[in-house]
Length: 324
Image (cartoon, rainbow, N blue to C red; front, side, top):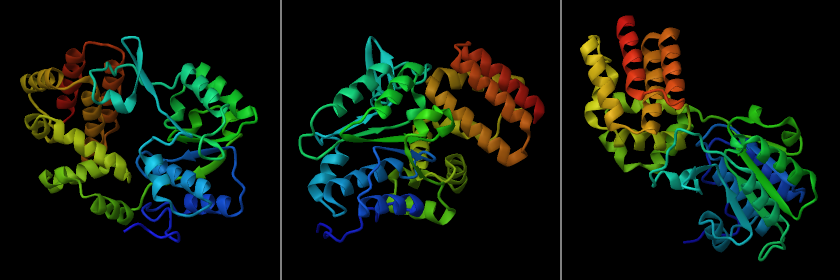
């Protein structure tokens, strides 16, 4: 049964009362800003809230099954979604599609000048179904310099549309970009809210987790259900013999070298970076020794700067074993 028109558009979004209150007020008062900055952690509902907000603008605050379906399926003719891309064999591959393709991920995905030019062209066209064009840019802090300057010009020029910029690192944006946006804050979820969302999502691969695994992944996710789901999938994809070794790092040099070999031969670069993040969280929970965190942070920099991965892991694991 479809919800009625009185259905709360934001009913499935947990723990973001301030953001939702601001957005509802904007629609109620019919004071829609040309640009919004949705700022807060990954995986706490920023994108789905953006889509619900656009739905409410289109329908003047009422629920619409058709509009929601088109927005959520990214096939609304007046909606443009933008996300960072990898340059792969001369083509731009979005970071979401790159998960299913063999893309070199050592270079971080970026939002590029050509993408912002397409945004400008899109907003310059007459909308097809709605009264305005709608653009949502995810991880907007990953713009390169040329893209940032181009986006600033888009924000400075009058347009028949609305821009929603989503970021977890607002400090990385130009102040002139931030000053032209209505700021909508998103926060980390409380433990109760986090568990409520996870319970509702009911990820099937969660059944294989031990209590220790779940606690470690929860700590790594920092109150973000979306990040927990991502972390759970990555953990599920790791070879189990490696997962078992991560909880008790080797104390003998020969075992450290063996683990370094397993990690570099069985995991791609993105998985290795994830393991470093996992180790940082787990070791800090166990010992709270800054030296361990610093060693692992240096390892991360080495892997991202094309140092030979196996050698970098060997050095780090040997140092960690000496400190245990």
